[in-house]
Figure 1 (cartoon, helix red, strand yellow):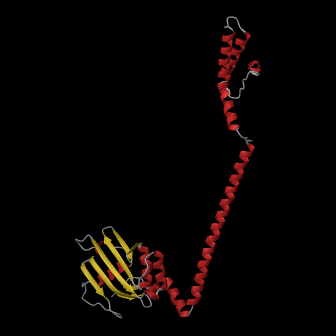
Figure 2 (cartoon, rainbow, N blue to C red):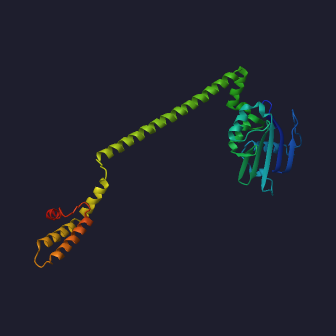
Figure 3 (tube, rainbow, N blue to C red):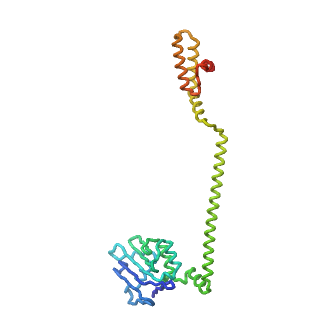
Length: 290
């Protein structure tokens, strides 16, 4: 024997629709208010309706649920009276599938190897539907759990019997606020640690910069020094040639030719060493130094 009982204070299963489920091709059942009883001989299909309800409530899908020859099966259950179940309504709102006029529609699309659960037309995880089932329905049958076997239901009954619903709500609110405060504190502490790490890194980088003794235009100076070092041998050779030209070595050209040669050598020196200020007043000194 199997029985189904609505779990909410006033919530009620008012309709179930089944298509291509097991041996059922198409079926829609509307339940009247109050006690409803299904009777029939063994094998008439009474348990299939229980399986269909279980399917909408997130039960693990069975391969035999899809009717032979069909590509998919579909089951849908409609509940009413959710206005008196604020906890369930809140859960629906948070999941993004709110209830309209206190109506809840649970659907399950079953195909080979997979299934899809929907709540008020929105696709949701089966685990979410299973959580809703605990507040909607009890299925009493051999080997199935009922509400009294669940610790959460036991606590709820104990609190209701003791008249502690209000105190329980206050404690739950305080617990949520405490958890939120702890999360905020942890986040602030994490930000503080991150700020300290960043400040330490910046101080280290600043010390490195200060110890380097950098100066304005130092890059240009370093570039010029690098160019001088790279062309040191060539600069020395040019200076030697210019000195020999000025000294009038044997076999050298005339004065005009010497001046032209010196001008060429000085120009090349200035090209290789931008810091060499070889004007007329310093030309001889520079060559002497070289």
